[in-house]
Length: 180
Ligand SMILES: O=c1ccn([C@H]2C[C@H](O)[C@@H](COP(=O)(O)OP(=O)(O)OP(=O)(O)O)O2)c(=O)[nH]1
Image (cartoon, rainbow, N blue to C red; front, side, top):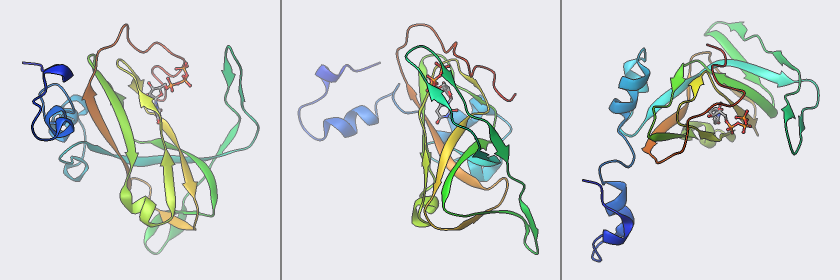
């Protein structure tokens, strides 16, 4: 049974009550079942870890207009061959990263992506946006590097969580089906 906010008990924490109600945030196991094809270590209690698929440096300006947008050109970086295998060695700056996993946000849900805390602890940040119901593709984010870091291709860098959500229509934007 779904509980409306106004029906939440007055004792205890309302936030805690809502966050644990059925239909709110789904478990990592539930999301993993939707996505399939994940390594065991990617499945977390509350979400699924996404891994580093590709890294790009933007090379020309983009544009956001009132009606429409242009994404700037970019250059894909090649990881260095090291004694420890392939590594991206990233100097401070901003990089567009593409996640390796094919994401599909089921209807009646919305996705939120967070950086892995080890990135933050290494002076890096991943900036992310909303994952709409019905979106399918391999998405992208902005990696801010504030101190040089080495990242292995396929390393876990982010965690996707899925929440139950009302919506009208499903995602039909320009990124639908990207990089599949
Ligand atoms: O960090 C994120 C967040 C979302 N997405 C995916 C899922 C989302 O559904 C889709 C579109 O995002 P958004 O709606 O923010 O794109 P937009 O800039 O508004 O473009 P459009 O209007 O073409 O959708 O991109 C990402 O790749 N990275």
